[in-house]
Image (cartoon, rainbow, N blue to C red):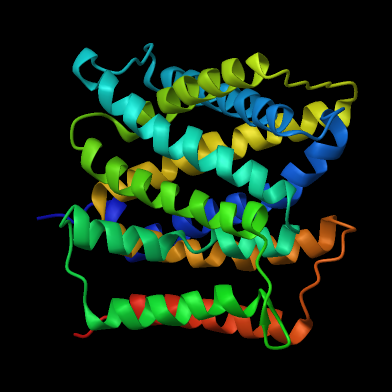
Length: 304
């Protein structure tokens, strides 16, 4: 029987790394977007910015995929509840915490904290949804990876974590982990790209309405601001659609382990594109990246 390309190791690796590179670039571009399109840096405006981004991402996903398939794609009626559930965890809860958290921490720390989602995903998939077994190897990898998250927040011997910054980004990672497991389950009933596109639209519109009720403001007064918003929408449309396809055809742990590479891409791009002081020493940063990469290697190791 011919093996599906979607489970081919090289294909999974290249596509997963592409997604991680796109997500890693999101953190610095979001912070650049804050400066370009938010006249007032409050919670409501931050959520409005996110809502516009994801509504646009959903429209782009559905439009591109419909053109490719030569028909308008809409979710089956019986799957609307599944779309709404994914939207709740993947877009609304995840990104309300993420955008607020990122506004209260640095790009480097925010990127690395958001990279903790593989640990949450493996725990949820193994202990709650019983989609796979929680092995000693996975536990060891999780401990090493979480050590990396802690190291980047250390100043001397003090654990320096900002609740509305670093902790909110961790809450966001946990919500995303739930959505990954749900995508794996629901993609057996609905096309994962359709799920991704419409959950963005549902979640994005909800965030826009809530933020407007609380006085959110966004001003797109320059081509740079518009360009950042379009780029963020495109990266979401591409990355989440590809990620959903990979989750449909592979175990959650095999796909989500690559998320540890998001901090690697994010740290490099944050240091390149942002002028802020990261407050992370080179030694701590190097230790974090070593620990995160070690977690990837442990979870990727296969005993023949």
